[in-house]
Image (cartoon, rainbow, N blue to C red):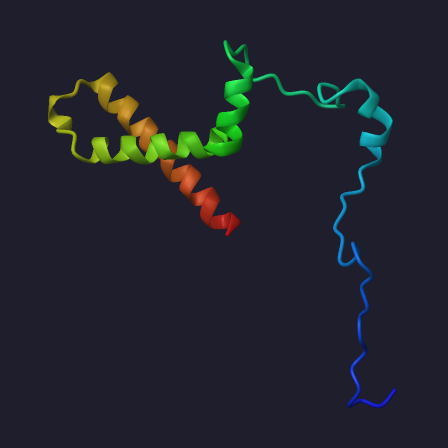
Length: 111
C-alpha cells in the first residue's frame, strides 16, 4: 500500500472499540457475589450501608471526604490564636499540621 493511502477501519453495527477488563479471579469467584474476594476490607458497621455506598459513589471516597475536612480544618487552624492554647492543645494542632503536610508531600510526589 503506498504511503499516501491510509488504512480504513470498518466497524459493523454495534461494533467498534471495546474496552473490557479481563479479571480471571472474578470468573472463579463471581458465584459468591460481590462480598467474596481474596482481600476484604471492612470499614466498620454502618446503620445504612446502602446510603454509605451511594455517598461514596456520588460524593467522594473516604480519602476525598477526609481531604476536604482537612482543608477546612486548616483554614480554622490558621486563624487560631495559639497563645491561648496549653501545651497538649498546641501539640494536637502541630500533629494535625504535620499530617496534612505529609499528605500534601505524598500527593505532590504522585503527580
